[in-house]
Image (cartoon, rainbow, N blue to C red; front, top):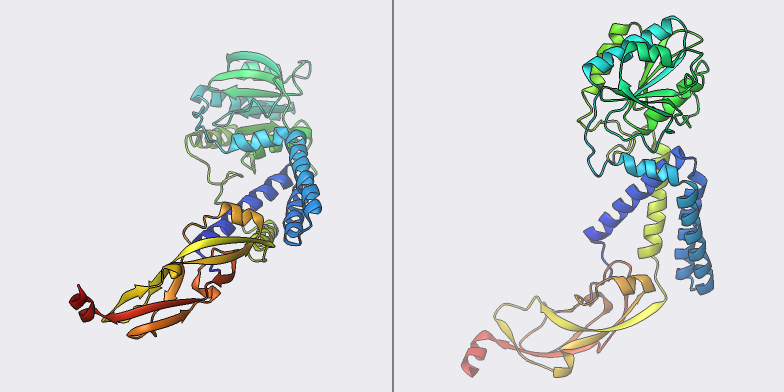
Length: 388
């Protein structure tokens, strides 16, 4: 008899979280169709194995491998960014210095007032090397004058972004990734879309001065705020830069962030995980394996003890049915056949064993046992002591 243990529940939960993260990443990277295709191929392969379609399962397995390779090759930058955002190595924080933040705020506001477009990035914890083009190396002290010169229309690098790391302007003319979001405000131009794209993919603070409207917008971690003065911009930037040493609560790749605004992805992940889990554990397989397992006697009546047992009934042969994968991976050495002596009496007893006597792992079915009957003699404990 197969029983659902805590291991099966944990497997289902882990599979659900993994599929959810895959679907969310693939949606952001515009690889949702490919990810769903991979999952569909995997489900089809499991179903083909259950139906003994050997060649079909081979073809589907090969197609799954090809699809995974295509995902890795075609979306390598997106995968690299996703791994970078996990912050496994614990990179050191690099908040901007007070003087640099003051220079950035003053310059951004001044550029907005004269309707000169500008895009300034303040790096915090995440590395930006994989997200932006190198641009032109500068490595100069951050100052309002340099920003004003960089973003003048006659400057060859005015269309790109200036990158601030610590108290230095490390690069200018860098190109940022555009947002993949739909529903972007119509007033947002290329600079705003680039700022949104970088803010979605890293913890950097991105400041945009609009050339058309003269306003200044601060973006970070999917948030956007239109500021009303240089002082407000400086205060907000200082507050956010000071958080660089802490893990932001709203990071897109936090495992605990199953937001209610993503019910569709959550439902899809649960459904797909349940389907894969069911095909793996709940459907009977076509493979049969015979194991020799020991007999364990349980519920021995009080005052009685085992006096004699047939040598040939110390173990039984068990026929197990399941799919080949489970039979090869699950540890079957712990199986025992439990012989219930709750109704036994003094003297010779013949106990019949049914398949339910063996508690098989989930996904494995006990087809038969041999021998089906166990002969055992019981005597009282006092008789056992007299014999000794």
